[in-house]
Length: 181
Image (cartoon, rainbow, N blue to C red; front, side, top):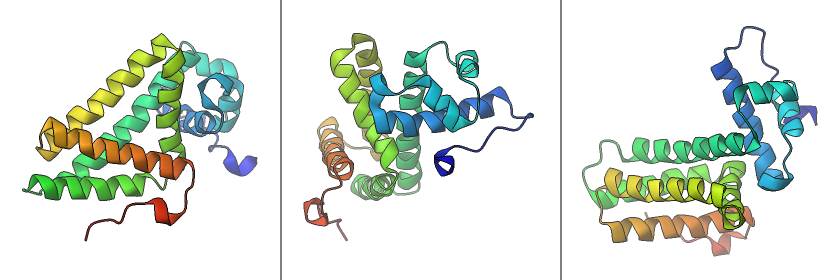
């Protein structure tokens, strides 16, 4: 269990650094247990802080989950923007973004958190608004960064959602589409 814990924050860590440590711990906990079964006590333990300190950083578990989902989606958006930078052709940008996403799939916990947000949103209207906003934001981001039509952005995101399922279920390689050369 100690190997799974995030490094204990130093006495000099800023609240922003501690917030980031808590979010990293929350990614792991929410990925393993989902929104409803994850506990702030377990997240605090992973982050090496007391449970009450979580509530100094986040008003409640809902807001911690929202921040965790935003962190994961932000990581995806950053990876897409970095991959597309400097490429002139929209399809080249999409291909580069697809390669970047495949690399992100190796961090299974982040992909599972993304899927957990969709599952939690199905039964919780407050979480649904967050999940909807983040999901639509990814589509808009793909459209804008790649410079493609909405339809092409939707195709790209749909392919990514399929890859999420493959990664989350740890399916054999035969279920992963061949990456274009």
